[in-house]
Length: 153
Length: 136
Ligand code: HEM
Ligand code: HEM
Image (cartoon, rainbow over all chains, first blue to last red; front, side, top):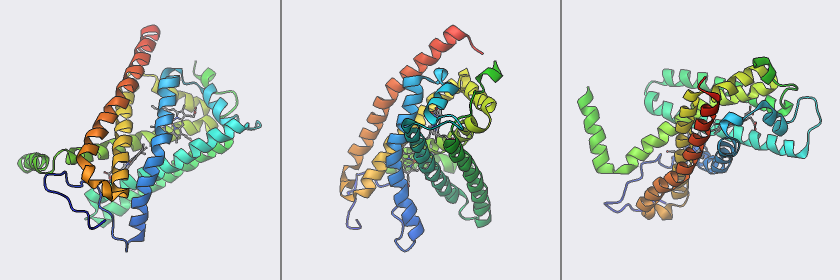
């Protein structure tokens, strides 16, 4: 790795450099960003294209979520277990990848003020964990019976 | 105040080429998707806890303002995915570093190829929806 020379005239690497191997947390996170990113190419893009190009945002309905996640209290089909697993993996990877990305950005701009950096990150991590726990719980429970569509109209 | 900023922007463009711009775009697009994701997971989890609130979130997804934002979201997501793949592959396989310039060009081309039909289909669906349902 270290022996790779950059020829003048070539674009210099502008991405985050490979961290010192002595810092195992940063090395782990560096690798995680790359592998989770590669997994998210399939997960996030397939989800986005399913909701927009196949279904279309304006056709999205509560019944669709009930179909995929199952309904709270009712028996779960194999397809619904697969859908839930797909969303669970995407949720964990996207949130962890996103949080670590936000951490890097926050460090770049506030790293020289540790109190601000730690304060900001604590707030962000707490909010992210709460939202993710809610998302996970929803996946275990399935969508509510009935649905709120009628409540709005 | 502004002068050094402009100088930095111009000089980094001149010295370091398009990589600097791609880095900034990667950062902005990543942050854009994170912000959406936070509200999105909260909203969708309401399918289990609070269906009326879930429906209210879905109703927001069907407003003209969101339809425009959605196109920005598509651009952020697709660009970040393609450019991120380039970063990951090049860094996990350092022997490919010599191909940087080609890789950069291709990540822009692939982003545009994936994005063009996506945006056209999304815009078509949105416009035909508002044409029949009216703007709300
Ligand atoms: C779709 C596939 C994705 C790929 C291939 C990917 C790849 C990457 C890579 C390799 C990095 C590290 C860049 C560096 O260290 O300089 C990164 C950073 C980042 N990613 Fe992703 N990512 C993807 C999806 C996402 C998603 C869904 C989110 C939002 C939840 C996101 C948010 C971020 C943020 C905020 C950063 C930090 C940017 C910075 O440090 O400037 N990414 N991404
Ligand atoms: C505007 C674009 C999007 C729409 C319309 C949309 C729509 C939906 C819908 C309807 C669900 C409920 C599950 C279902 O019915 O199948 C859902 C869940 C989910 N979406 Fe999206 N999605 C969008 C973009 C994204 C993006 C860009 C990401 C991630 C990078 C994402 C991540 C998730 C996750 C993690 C869940 C599971 C939430 C939970 O467990 O509470 N979505 N989405």
